[in-house]
Image 1 (cartoon, rainbow, N blue to C red):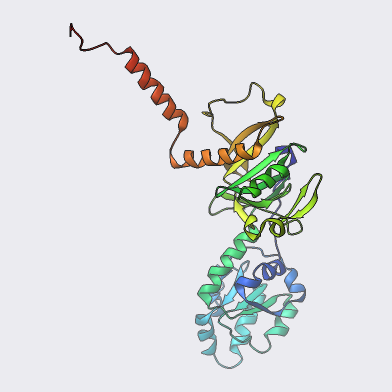
Image 2 (image 1 turned 90 degrees about the vertical axis):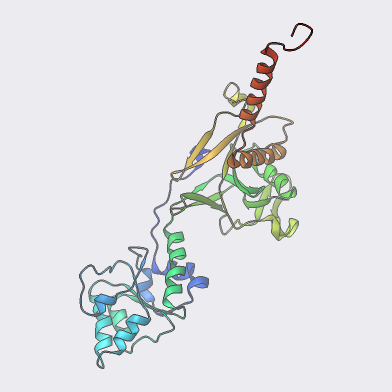
Length: 331
């Protein structure tokens, strides 16, 4: 429910977070770390300090991660002995707190001590510059994305990410278990971590690292979903396409839209997501209802509206019934 959701957390992160998050993508080797890895990434972007290496510091983007690529390396190698080190050290004097050497380049002798003295970090990667920029964008965007946590269960149903919310005791986990047994996949049980993809203006759900792949079922206990149902029964992360709010029948009497014409949305981290309220009472098959709701949403998204279609058929029948008779013996 809305009051169970925590506010979006400030998305600040350190160089150490960047190294850990980019372990697989970025192939980073930390040459100088220590206290420098505690430094907050002030502007989550990479910058090639070409002009700064020539001594021009106007508009130098020192708040970003500095990447020495092939062009910068060629320029530094064209300088007299001792000058390349002085040019790179000068970046620290202008505020640079992280320098990354791409293309497997060697770090100049003497730069390690200069970085340690400045409290900065120096790293290497064997990725070419272009590929490093491309991959680092994904890592930095993920780290800075707004996030929040909700007491809700998320399941992939018919290819859609469905977030199921509701008060405790309404059967969210049992419903998710039934959906998994029907061939759908669990994303997160009971506690969902949500991040916003700013570029896509979409939100994505995942489980916490500790509880990922696990469910708590009253009367049974803790189960490991992939161990019981196979690895296809879980998803690491899923875009949220639909929010289903479970509410007790007595709490929604008189509020329900019986035809489904009313289109409701739920705003999460500034993103509007379609929302459906399903009343819960004894005997209602929530698994079947949620599967049907997901299929119905897919039809709506494709442009088909059952209410509009039925209305057109009723109007056509009424017009036919009211039309004057033609033909016959006096026609």
